[in-house]
Image 1 (cartoon, rainbow, N blue to C red):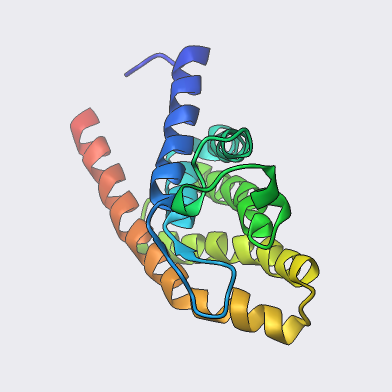
Image 2: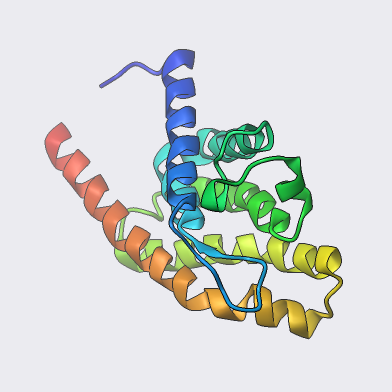
Length: 182
């Protein structure tokens, strides 16, 4: 087993931020919405489950900071503080509570079996929307119905798909790790 050091932790946090940035480039425009469908939230829940609450949350904070600093980490290679302050910023900020929640639940082993991982990852996805949709409504000056129409409903199928992918793959990965440690 690799000893946990600050350098090791920093490398894992950086890897989590880079995974989220990589998955952000998987992006599809949604007609009528300023928010694209991306793979980012899959990166959020996978890194949070794998790294735990402290490192998983730190990975998302680092992801936001590196993108804000100008690295092309956000969807479609975008960057800058303006992206965080804009219509999609709430979704980006929502990665932080989602990572914390998923990481805390994973620490208790809820990510180890598909039947507990899937609901956990669905809630993690929904936490992103809890922050993102009101933010979108305020920034884009939309009423709640319109904000839900362009910022939530089109994204639910993809969120469920990403939760299912993570809910299937992570328990399998944990089983493989456990079988190699035995």
